[in-house]
Length: 52
Image (cartoon, rainbow, N blue to C red; front, side):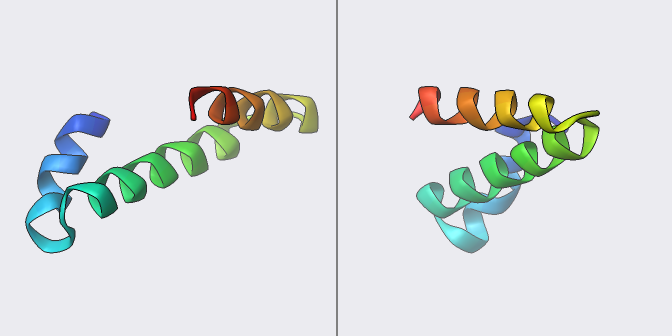
């Protein structure tokens, strides 16, 4: 499921802003779980901060 699909799924229950936050958090958690090293996790977090 893409992030946009997840937002559409969550929106009726949580509203648009909360649905976006939840979907973003789920994506971030998945990326961190897939990261192999602490440096990979740092890179994921750095990218997340740059997108804000």
